[in-house]
Image (cartoon, rainbow, N blue to C red; front, side, top):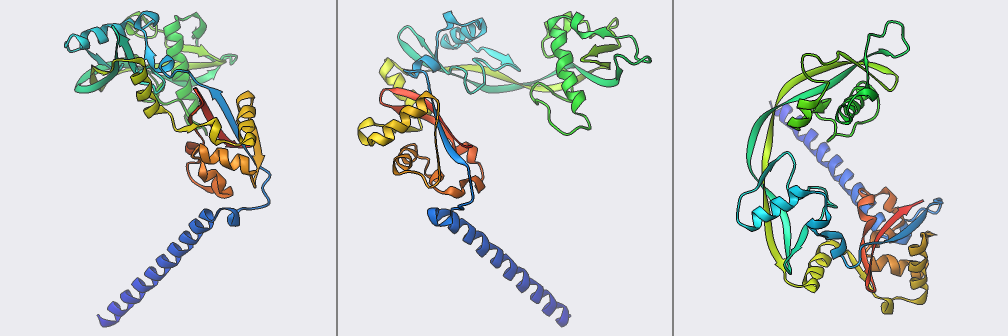
Length: 332
């Protein structure tokens, strides 16, 4: 027993020593990275490219919606209901959209409102799921009779295309657009589209020809548990200036002043606005000052290409004078 205890103690000391050595090695690597110029490799030919693309100015043009100018009547209905204190709920589709570039604000009778939603329940529903199985080439002599996808309705062509992407990816290297593809196929979530579909029902075809391949159609009805969303509307500003300040606080990452920049730095920004500007390391003092003003100090270290999440650091929105720009930094 004593020998076993000594053996275990020795193994523990060896593991601790190995861990400490690995930790010191990792720390040394980090220190080398932070040291900047001393840690740069001289054998790289890459350049750091800066691009500036003009963004909506003022920001209200990109983030404040006018329901009278949109093609989404459901949003107008959701806004009116929430403003009146009524509960407006949706399922699967979130009120006012859910993509990052969807407008989040609306102006109504001189007041700016923030548009959002909350989850208030879940609902169990059954949806048809279409999956495709590769059978044969359309030119093959033993290919079964199949309906041509081009002869289907637009909705059904979309369903076949999405299910095709899922079928094509099975067993192959690559990916599929998850979000469009769900449960390995296409989900008919819209009841009206499902009712009108030629791919569902007793008289549906058994095979479809799409992009030179005959696929077997397989449809199953499956249970889904979906969130129920309630539209929310909150007043946030009574003037355009206050609304602009709210948007700047959320979406502007850096602010550049012409007065605080050298003539050389201003020239770099003019070039970046026209197309792009790039330099190889070591960067000029003017380029370093521009990167510093963009709060992109990590790029002053030539080893950033070895760091994680470099792409997350290389883009943002900047206010230069009275104009907004989306900037991007990347190595070329």
